[in-house]
Image (cartoon, rainbow, N blue to C red; front, side):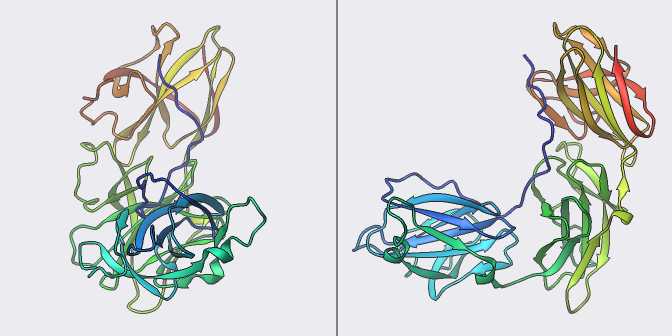
Length: 392
């Protein structure tokens, strides 16, 4: 039985490291609450026993406006905490200097006395808290540590992407010096309506490249510089300009390039008037008397690439709505519930024959996965705007 696509998935995520740290026999549960509008990552330090050095551990991710409960085997009254925003611009600091791994998940058993000179290690300032004070809550409740925006210290920034629209915008960007052949592109970063996503400006960079789109894909802000992106997951590509998109099943997008001023902030505003809007939004309806499953292909005219997505299961009389298509046609491969082919054509593209999938380079990829195979698609012309297509 095929696994079907779950509709409504937004493009995801930020690229700061987070940890799945080893389990332990915890004694002291604590609740960490992120009061900001950006995901944060926390490090915690404590003494497991009275005779041991301070153990520092990180990083736990806490989503915006959310709380996570975590336990620690703490001896004594002291716990130390440090946090940073996913953009790494805002830090919650204290007066106690401890060693951390700034780039990866870590456990450091002697964080107060380490030389802190290994790869990724650096000193961070932790805030000391009294467990006795934290326990001054109603009996039976877990003590809470809040991370409020007003208590954060800004330690970076200078590169802002501001969303002047009424819906979320997802952003990919990179910075480089003019003479550099390549550029690292990171994505995707979220800017809420009326808000800005701020990043650390690289001192040596004098150019910024960026691309953005809406969650539905209906709108995008693009330029004329082709770069490899991942259309469905967060990513960091150190060779986005020269890597093979087809070999890695990645999608090409056209990035805008602008100069970064030698001093002061760089700010770019994403406005509705500047967005490219996709040609059509398609509703596909099953007019037959039995359930069908189909794969939808969409041609990208800019790069002659085909995005294939499936499987969609539609019961008799039901519809799949809001399929964004920036083309004069769509490609369809349709099967009945017994897996006999209902519709196909001469247009060959790769699919996963068993599981839900999304392929950015369906006609160019090697198609060598466990369930991959090439099948025929029928090309169906569609009108611009809101379109309903009935499948007989």
